[in-house]
Image: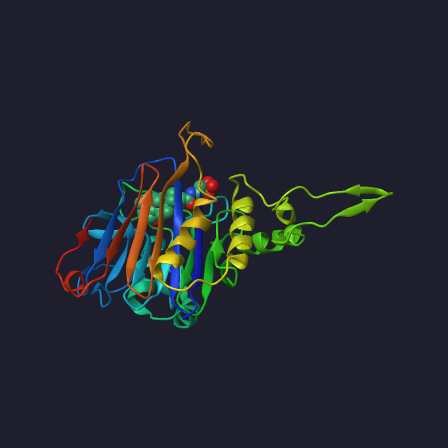
Length: 316
Ligand SMILES: C[C@H](CCC(=O)NCCS(=O)(=O)O)[C@H]1CC[C@H]2[C@@H]3[C@H](O)C[C@@H]4C[C@H](O)CC[C@]4(C)[C@H]3C[C@H](O)[C@]12C
């Protein structure tokens, strides 16, 4: 499972990232793709990158295959599992921009600066079920895309085709679909950051005990709907913060509260599924912050004038 989160600071700078919750080691690393790096496509003419990108991923045949990535202009995208729903086109479709589903990460971060532009361009996109190479399966993902101004969620399913949702909550988890998750929030509208008050039930005074009584019922389990509701609630109530340090702390405070702790979830392959890393990109400083289940030290990697103009990937 995974959880994506975005919010802005008091000056409108974006903080955007995710938890990666998996039961498998992909050997992922932080990768900076420079400008002018070869960018092959399955159905479009090969080209070169025009914007530097930073994020977490693996390199497959020289191709930076990102799990989440962010460009130097502050536009980012994260892929999260969307099992039982995600279904891409079997074949390319004439007259459309055909992208292999894994190509959406770099297509978005190379061609656009704003979500507004992405939304317009997506109207003509067809995502094709095509793996990078025969060693990999097609990942059944949906995506959250964000800039300073707004966020959207992109889903392609058998039931609904391609859908692009405004994500005012700044949250994405896994299945069911985004619309279902937002509808489900209606079950949590009684939550309040304020404590419950003293009640009188048939003459009996009933006292709320201690702080936090307004949030009784806020979920704490690991299912996607629970993580969605919890992060949506916390993101809506966490006060706007000033400065990079406080905003990065806000990000990790919220996402670690839905992190899956090793041993608490065992998937149907018998593997521990847990939060392997948490990562947050700051558009203000072009910095990718991350830490790992096995090492909480906060690592910082930045798109710099030096690494954006190299002619090779920088792999940390
Ligand atoms: C498993 C990851 C998503 C984690 C997640 O959302 N889990 C939820 C589980 S569930 O819903 O509750 O079942 C996804 C996110 C990005 C994915 C990777 C990226 O898409 C990059 C390549 C793409 C290749 O097609 C497959 C390998 C891969 C390296 C992918 C492996 C895997 O599917 C990743 C790592």
